[in-house]
Image (cartoon, rainbow, N blue to C red; front, side):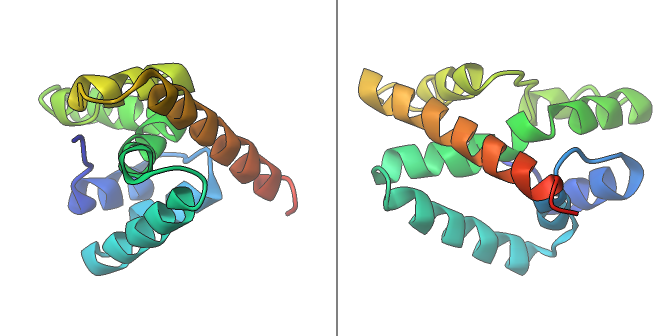
Length: 132
């Protein structure tokens, strides 16, 4: 499973313009806070689906939503090795396919559900941006 090291996430949040306030908060959290956030997110997603989909959403949602900030950080710091840990994901469908690559036992309906839930969170976070 792909994960963003929390120290790297902090550096990304400090040095890049983040697209989503919710992700900026997550990236700025310490390790314990981020673990708790991810656990809460997994529980929320499990209400809509199963554990496999929830794990995929938790792993790939930040990579998808903040792909631009991550790519910018990697390019600016010239740390191309980070790309293996944080692949560029430009669509919810690619996020779901990356999750399947990580877990080849994912069924087609789980892949579809993963993409759907990621798009739903993207829409929700976008709406929250516009409330300010």
